[in-house]
Length: 115
Picture 1: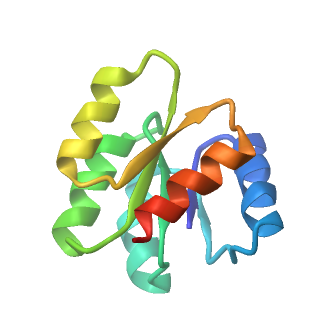
Picture 2 (picture 1 turned 90 degrees about the vertical axis):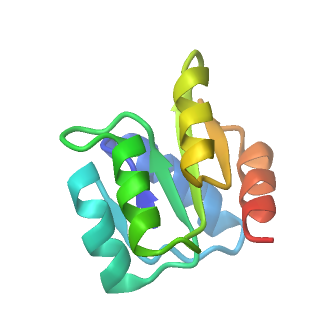
């Protein structure tokens, strides 16, 4: 499941993932929709942007981890968000991807998160 408020970023990430054999179970644009959609589709992996309208990505991650402590979530961040990335990792994220996306790096992080 891809979570990002920017349509363009979801499109880029979708292309990287599908080009590498991943199936997209769903897409979400708002933080307050993450838990509901996760419970509805039960994806194997979630990519979750830190900066989202409404409920931010960190809070959405915390809510998701309360519902499913085994959820595999990889955070998406822009450069310069190191403090937020560390908070996300402490809250249960399995890794993080930096924008702008580098396809090989994205796939490497996702593979590690699924182990």
